[in-house]
Structure formats: C-alpha cells, structure tokens
Length: 207
Image (cartoon, rainbow, N blue to C red; front, side):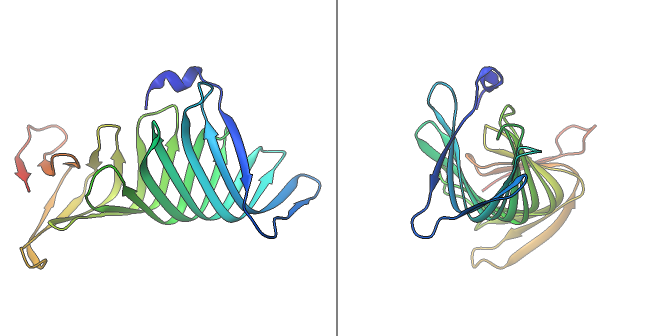
C-alpha cells in the first residue's frame, strides 16, 4: 500500500448477493441484506472487498454498519489478508474501516499464524493496521499476547508493552514463558525481536 491513495478517489461498487435481497428505506437509514461490496481506487485497482449478511447505511452520517463481517484486503490482484469480526463500520467515504468483536486476521501470502484482537482500525491512506484489546498471535512455534499491536506493510507486527510470549516445543507444548516490553515479529523471516523502547535490542530469536 502506498500514500498515493491520498490522491485517489475511492469508488464503491455494490454487488447484492443472491436470494432475498431487501433494502428498507426509512428517513435516513437503509437496511441491506447480503451486502457484497468492492472498493476500488480511481486507477481500477481493488483495495478491499467486504461482505455482510446484515448491514445498514446511514445517509446522514454516510456510514455503513455491518454484522458478521468478512474483509479481503488486496495487494494487486492477490488477496493479502482475510479479516473477520462480529461487526464493523465503514466511514469517511469508505476509507476508514473499523472492526469490533472477535477480530481474526489471516495472512494469505504468508503461511504463518493467525492474529486475534478485540478491535481493528485501518485508514486506507495509511500503510499500517492498528489492533487493540486482547491481542493474540499464534504460530506453530510461538504465542504472543499484548494489549495493542500494529501490522505494517512489510509484514512486521509490533507488539506494545507489556508483551507476554510463549515458545513452544516440538510437540506443540509450552517450552518456556517470558514477559517483555515491546516485541517485533517478522512474518516473512519468522524472527522475533525484543527490546525496551529506549534501549538497544536485547535479544533476537529465529525460528
């Protein structure tokens, strides 16, 4: 993703799912069944797609409210991440994406673990995804917990203080458990870096 999106007009494209698709229009609120929407940049690149069986659109605030949300984030023509949650909102001309409740982020391009959180925030003009509340990232070799995390465009997850991590043994059991301040996990290289904010890196683990 690039800051070029600051200059791009976002074009929403609606596809209503098959079956009983109903739009109920009141004074300012439209209720939509089986929403399937793609968001494109002006140059035609697909930025993300979003699906929800139950959603609504508020004309006054120009905001979507969606339940049981699934979002695919694209890198070119390929899906980079799949994210699901209990509910979500789209605002600011669909450039601000917020998910809440049982958020799960899965990387498609990297065969690694899953990232869980209570909340997910993404402004598509930014290269970073912010996750807050009960962060958990688990692979076959390590589990990390923290109250806040940030995933950047280079597939590096920054876990904010306090960080708790568990190294697993070969039979998938807990090997040892350690607490740390900030930690950085590189999904591509499967390396874990620890260190305090104002100190040099204290340790690096490669899996």
